[in-house]
Length: 290
Image (tube, rainbow, N blue to C red; front, side, top):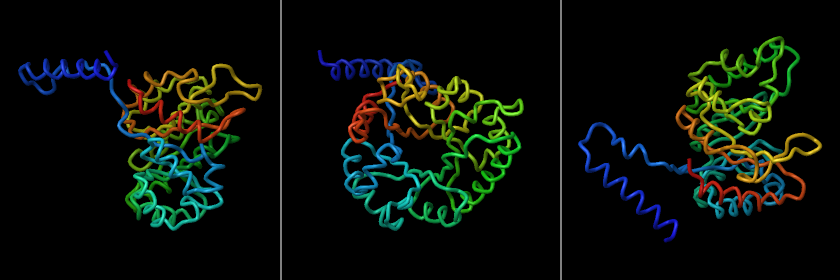
């Protein structure tokens, strides 16, 4: 019996049993269904940055063909919209059945304009991708102030702001964990966080514990796997499903605590082909269940 037919029969049986029970909210048997697919997933364009720089439109066409339905851009030399006006970019996305959900950007420069342009084409988030290790915990607190201001600007335009972590924010500074400090000192009504699962694991932390401790704050995540053996230079990214991270457990925990947007990201590694990796990662995500 084929896997698809077996899954169909199994799910049909659950549904029939559930419908035969007296209705009381949701059927407990329906809630027992063991598998759940991610409804849509995106890709951070940093994954294919070299290809984007050479030919953005052709690269996006390929990304759409792989099965991605969302993208997260970043602000490079050609801007968040890759040399196009925001409305031109949106039109091209629509033609490819893609949705630009978010973008990493420089929050220190002309942020009001960026927020207005993002909002005008229906984007959900602008994201600070990196601040780097800081000398003191007060430096991190000053960034919290900047994040709150950015959050206010985004709110005024009808979108949201988020910060994307690396491993450094989980390493204690002056006896405090910067990630905790930033989460405690930012306005939860205007500032969200994008959990880069890879970097949380690289820091020796448990992503599930962070989801549980801060429900509703991690609305986006980067699905990025870690090689089974570390390179000489430290941790190394690898195609999703070929590494060490238990995404089934982590993403299930995230979904229960408010995680909404799943964004694939992969750093280049020795011998890697970014577009081939993007295609392989999409194949994994399409078949992924938790």
